[in-house]
Amino acid sequence: MHLFEILVVLHVISGATGLIAFWVPVVTRKGAASHRRWGRIACYGFIAAGTLAIAMALLSLFGTEERLPSVKDRALFDGLFGWMMLYLGLLTIGFADYGLSVVKHARSREELRGGRYQVVIVAVIASALNCGLYGYLIGEILMIAVAVLGVVAMGLQQRFIWRAQVPGPRAYIGEHFRALIGMGISAYTAFMAVGLIRWVPEEVFNPLVWAGPSVIGVSLIIGFTLQTKRVSAPKTKPA
Image (cartoon, rainbow, N blue to C red):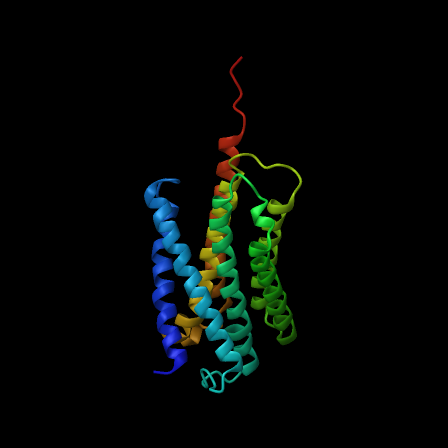
Protein backbone atom coordinates (compact mmCIF):
# COMPACT_ATOMS: atom_id res chain seq x y z
CA MET A 1 0.00 0.00 0.00
CA HIS A 2 1.36 3.41 -1.01
CA LEU A 3 1.83 6.27 1.44
CA PHE A 4 -1.10 8.23 0.00
CA GLU A 5 -3.46 5.26 0.40
CA ILE A 6 -2.34 4.81 4.01
CA LEU A 7 -3.05 8.49 4.67
CA VAL A 8 -6.50 8.12 3.11
CA VAL A 9 -7.34 5.17 5.38
CA LEU A 10 -6.15 7.03 8.49
CA HIS A 11 -8.01 10.15 7.36
CA VAL A 12 -11.23 8.18 6.96
CA ILE A 13 -10.87 6.58 10.41
CA SER A 14 -10.08 9.83 12.25
CA GLY A 15 -12.59 11.82 10.21
CA ALA A 16 -15.38 9.31 10.76
CA THR A 17 -14.66 9.39 14.49
CA GLY A 18 -14.97 13.15 14.53
CA LEU A 19 -18.04 13.20 12.27
CA ILE A 20 -19.91 10.78 14.52
CA ALA A 21 -18.79 12.27 17.84
CA PHE A 22 -19.51 15.81 16.61
CA TRP A 23 -23.29 15.49 16.99
CA VAL A 24 -23.27 14.23 20.59
CA PRO A 25 -22.25 17.58 22.16
CA VAL A 26 -24.60 19.39 19.76
CA VAL A 27 -27.70 17.55 21.04
CA THR A 28 -26.72 16.83 24.67
CA ARG A 29 -26.98 19.18 27.64
CA LYS A 30 -24.25 21.80 27.46
CA GLY A 31 -21.59 21.47 30.16
CA ALA A 32 -22.53 17.89 31.05
CA ALA A 33 -19.83 15.23 31.33
CA SER A 34 -20.93 13.57 28.08
CA HIS A 35 -20.89 16.93 26.30
CA ARG A 36 -17.30 17.61 27.36
CA ARG A 37 -16.06 14.07 26.72
CA TRP A 38 -17.56 13.67 23.25
CA GLY A 39 -16.66 17.23 22.35
CA ARG A 40 -13.00 16.50 23.02
CA ILE A 41 -13.21 13.27 21.01
CA ALA A 42 -14.71 15.16 18.08
CA CYS A 43 -12.06 17.89 18.26
CA TYR A 44 -9.13 15.50 18.45
CA GLY A 45 -10.59 13.38 15.65
CA PHE A 46 -10.97 16.44 13.44
CA ILE A 47 -7.49 17.73 14.30
CA ALA A 48 -6.05 14.38 13.22
CA ALA A 49 -8.18 14.37 10.06
CA GLY A 50 -7.13 17.95 9.29
CA THR A 51 -3.45 17.11 9.71
CA LEU A 52 -3.81 14.12 7.38
CA ALA A 53 -5.71 16.26 4.86
CA ILE A 54 -2.76 18.67 4.81
CA ALA A 55 -0.36 15.77 4.17
CA MET A 56 -2.54 14.43 1.33
CA ALA A 57 -2.87 17.89 -0.20
CA LEU A 58 0.91 18.35 -0.23
CA LEU A 59 1.37 14.91 -1.81
CA SER A 60 -1.23 15.77 -4.46
CA LEU A 61 0.52 19.05 -5.23
CA PHE A 62 4.18 18.07 -5.03
CA GLY A 63 4.28 14.26 -5.06
CA THR A 64 5.81 12.41 -8.01
CA GLU A 65 2.68 10.30 -8.63
CA GLU A 66 -0.27 11.86 -10.45
CA ARG A 67 -3.47 11.65 -8.37
CA LEU A 68 -6.76 10.72 -10.05
CA PRO A 69 -5.54 10.65 -13.68
CA SER A 70 -9.20 10.42 -14.76
CA VAL A 71 -9.55 14.12 -13.89
CA LYS A 72 -8.31 15.89 -17.03
CA ASP A 73 -8.48 19.45 -15.72
CA ARG A 74 -5.30 19.39 -13.65
CA ALA A 75 -5.52 23.07 -12.68
CA LEU A 76 -8.94 22.43 -11.17
CA PHE A 77 -7.64 19.28 -9.47
CA ASP A 78 -4.72 21.19 -7.93
CA GLY A 79 -7.16 23.82 -6.76
CA LEU A 80 -9.77 21.59 -5.11
CA PHE A 81 -7.65 18.65 -3.98
CA GLY A 82 -4.46 20.59 -3.40
CA TRP A 83 -4.72 24.18 -2.25
CA MET A 84 -8.32 24.07 -1.05
CA MET A 85 -7.83 20.79 0.83
CA LEU A 86 -4.67 22.24 2.42
CA TYR A 87 -6.67 25.29 3.50
CA LEU A 88 -9.63 23.24 4.78
CA GLY A 89 -7.28 21.05 6.81
CA LEU A 90 -5.76 24.13 8.46
CA LEU A 91 -9.21 25.68 8.91
CA THR A 92 -10.49 22.54 10.67
CA ILE A 93 -7.48 22.55 13.00
CA GLY A 94 -7.89 26.30 13.62
CA PHE A 95 -11.56 25.98 14.55
CA ALA A 96 -10.97 22.97 16.82
CA ASP A 97 -8.00 24.62 18.53
CA TYR A 98 -9.93 27.84 19.15
CA GLY A 99 -13.07 26.02 20.28
CA LEU A 100 -11.11 24.18 22.95
CA SER A 101 -8.84 27.06 23.97
CA VAL A 102 -11.60 29.65 24.37
CA VAL A 103 -13.13 27.42 27.06
CA LYS A 104 -9.77 26.65 28.66
CA HIS A 105 -8.98 30.38 28.91
CA ALA A 106 -12.56 31.55 29.50
CA ARG A 107 -11.52 33.94 32.29
CA SER A 108 -8.63 35.57 30.47
CA ARG A 109 -7.99 36.38 26.82
CA GLU A 110 -4.32 37.13 27.42
CA GLU A 111 -3.29 33.55 26.67
CA LEU A 112 -5.13 33.65 23.33
CA ARG A 113 -3.03 36.66 22.32
CA GLY A 114 0.20 34.67 22.64
CA GLY A 115 2.17 33.18 19.77
CA ARG A 116 0.90 29.65 20.43
CA TYR A 117 -2.63 30.56 19.25
CA GLN A 118 -1.88 33.47 16.94
CA VAL A 119 0.36 31.37 14.69
CA VAL A 120 -2.52 28.98 14.03
CA ILE A 121 -4.93 31.81 13.15
CA VAL A 122 -2.40 33.53 10.87
CA ALA A 123 -1.67 30.23 9.10
CA VAL A 124 -5.38 29.73 8.42
CA ILE A 125 -5.76 33.27 7.04
CA ALA A 126 -2.67 32.91 4.82
CA SER A 127 -3.90 29.59 3.39
CA ALA A 128 -7.39 31.07 2.86
CA LEU A 129 -5.97 34.00 0.88
CA ASN A 130 -3.88 31.61 -1.20
CA CYS A 131 -6.94 29.41 -1.84
CA GLY A 132 -9.05 32.40 -2.86
CA LEU A 133 -6.35 33.79 -5.14
CA TYR A 134 -5.86 30.46 -6.89
CA GLY A 135 -9.61 30.12 -7.28
CA TYR A 136 -9.77 33.58 -8.84
CA LEU A 137 -6.98 32.75 -11.27
CA ILE A 138 -8.70 29.57 -12.52
CA GLY A 139 -12.21 31.01 -12.30
CA GLU A 140 -13.44 28.65 -9.56
CA ILE A 141 -16.00 30.49 -7.44
CA LEU A 142 -16.21 27.66 -4.90
CA MET A 143 -12.62 28.21 -3.79
CA ILE A 144 -13.24 31.94 -3.41
CA ALA A 145 -16.41 31.36 -1.37
CA VAL A 146 -14.84 28.97 1.15
CA ALA A 147 -11.80 31.25 1.45
CA VAL A 148 -14.01 34.22 2.34
CA LEU A 149 -15.73 32.07 4.98
CA GLY A 150 -12.42 31.30 6.67
CA VAL A 151 -11.12 34.88 6.58
CA VAL A 152 -14.35 36.20 8.10
CA ALA A 153 -14.38 33.48 10.78
CA MET A 154 -10.77 34.12 11.80
CA GLY A 155 -11.46 37.86 11.79
CA LEU A 156 -14.35 37.39 14.21
CA GLN A 157 -12.14 35.31 16.47
CA GLN A 158 -9.46 37.99 16.47
CA ARG A 159 -12.07 40.62 17.23
CA PHE A 160 -13.10 38.70 20.35
CA ILE A 161 -9.49 38.12 21.39
CA TRP A 162 -8.19 41.64 20.89
CA ARG A 163 -11.14 43.98 21.50
CA ALA A 164 -10.65 46.42 24.34
CA GLN A 165 -14.12 45.95 25.78
CA VAL A 166 -14.19 43.24 28.43
CA PRO A 167 -16.67 40.53 27.35
CA GLY A 168 -19.33 39.18 29.66
CA PRO A 169 -18.53 36.18 31.86
CA ARG A 170 -20.39 33.82 29.51
CA ALA A 171 -19.37 35.39 26.20
CA TYR A 172 -16.95 32.56 25.57
CA ILE A 173 -19.87 30.12 25.16
CA GLY A 174 -20.95 31.72 21.90
CA GLU A 175 -17.35 31.73 20.65
CA HIS A 176 -16.99 28.07 21.61
CA PHE A 177 -20.20 27.07 19.83
CA ARG A 178 -19.50 29.00 16.63
CA ALA A 179 -15.93 27.67 16.43
CA LEU A 180 -16.98 24.03 16.76
CA ILE A 181 -19.85 24.40 14.29
CA GLY A 182 -17.31 25.96 11.94
CA MET A 183 -15.06 22.98 12.63
CA GLY A 184 -17.89 20.70 11.54
CA ILE A 185 -18.47 22.71 8.35
CA SER A 186 -14.82 22.61 7.28
CA ALA A 187 -14.40 18.96 8.30
CA TYR A 188 -17.48 17.77 6.39
CA THR A 189 -16.39 19.77 3.35
CA ALA A 190 -12.82 18.43 3.47
CA PHE A 191 -14.08 14.89 4.05
CA MET A 192 -16.10 15.14 0.82
CA ALA A 193 -12.91 15.92 -1.07
CA VAL A 194 -11.67 12.41 -0.25
CA GLY A 195 -14.86 10.37 -0.10
CA LEU A 196 -17.09 11.95 -2.73
CA ILE A 197 -14.68 11.30 -5.59
CA ARG A 198 -14.88 7.57 -4.84
CA TRP A 199 -18.61 7.25 -4.13
CA VAL A 200 -20.17 9.56 -6.73
CA PRO A 201 -17.34 10.83 -8.96
CA GLU A 202 -19.76 12.50 -11.37
CA GLU A 203 -20.83 14.90 -8.58
CA VAL A 204 -17.40 15.75 -7.23
CA PHE A 205 -17.35 19.25 -8.78
CA ASN A 206 -21.02 20.02 -8.04
CA PRO A 207 -20.97 23.28 -6.01
CA LEU A 208 -24.39 22.52 -4.48
CA VAL A 209 -23.01 19.36 -2.83
CA TRP A 210 -19.99 21.20 -1.46
CA ALA A 211 -22.16 24.05 -0.17
CA GLY A 212 -24.40 21.72 1.89
CA PRO A 213 -22.28 21.65 5.09
CA SER A 214 -21.92 25.44 5.02
CA VAL A 215 -25.68 25.99 4.65
CA ILE A 216 -26.47 23.65 7.56
CA GLY A 217 -23.67 24.97 9.77
CA VAL A 218 -24.40 28.65 9.19
CA SER A 219 -28.10 27.97 9.88
CA LEU A 220 -27.16 26.40 13.24
CA ILE A 221 -24.94 29.38 14.09
CA ILE A 222 -27.69 31.88 13.26
CA GLY A 223 -30.25 29.86 15.24
CA PHE A 224 -27.97 29.63 18.27
CA THR A 225 -27.17 33.36 18.11
CA LEU A 226 -30.85 34.33 18.01
CA GLN A 227 -31.67 31.91 20.84
CA THR A 228 -28.85 33.35 22.96
CA LYS A 229 -30.11 36.91 22.38
CA ARG A 230 -33.62 35.93 23.45
CA VAL A 231 -32.38 34.25 26.62
CA SER A 232 -30.07 37.11 27.58
CA ALA A 233 -32.54 39.89 26.76
CA PRO A 234 -33.88 41.68 29.85
CA LYS A 235 -37.41 40.63 30.80
CA THR A 236 -39.94 43.39 31.32
CA LYS A 237 -42.05 43.21 34.47
CA PRO A 238 -45.81 43.64 34.16
CA ALA A 239 -47.15 47.03 35.29
